[in-house]
Image 1 (tube, rainbow, N blue to C red):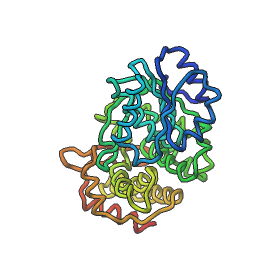
Image 2: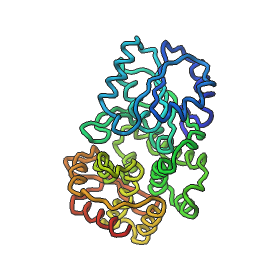
Image 3: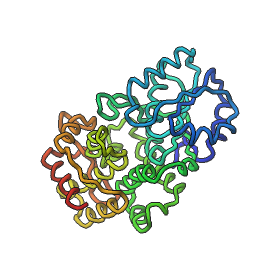
Length: 344
């Protein structure tokens, strides 16, 4: 079931209705270089309220304290008070960071997220995780806070390049692998680009919502949503400043293959299912050989999912069933990366 604060449909219509029903002193729309032209320009003529726009440069490298400080300074200088509203119009960087800024400014002001990428719509839109990167480590500083409203407008997906759309599709694959074997078999039978995006987004939101409903702060079952992310985040962080930088979903796709291998290594997942998962992911994504293994190991040591300096992953028992807090070591991680490099 999709929570009441998440709406799927025309973003301008839902924004106008929500803001008409509330009395905000100031409204700021946070955008980046991409969404100001591709998204805001598509809806601004239909917005029936006054607002200011704050534009930042696009990219994960801007998801930091320096950018936050600029926006906090802008809000302060323009006398935004606790009755203000921040609307985050963009992908995961804008929604994660904008929500974090709103949640900490004057101890919290209302905010609305309008995720414009597939990644943000199926992942960042649900669960209330907000934050920024720090010292080159992903999401090291943040809070849990559910937006006042989330509006998912499928038409924005048409503005995305194929590579960006594929990046978001990795989270769709993850949701199927941890919770819905039937859906994984369904998407496995067709070209990834032939999926019905409205149905795909709804399916992912329903899965993630059901998981996080009783575990907002990730003390238990919500950890299965981290499948592919322990190794995937370490790879993403390692490649963030390399010439062949990886998008989030591209790194997570590799992480899912590696962590599926570890699921077999730990005698949980069958070899046949590992082959099925690996073949599908490699067919969807342009595989690259993973180097800088020592740097990846350094980064995974900083993973916020670790417990008592022990590296923890989520592990598949079978396609559609996942468990969490499975300890792995550096040697096993190296073996999983070697497995990936050998099959591409």
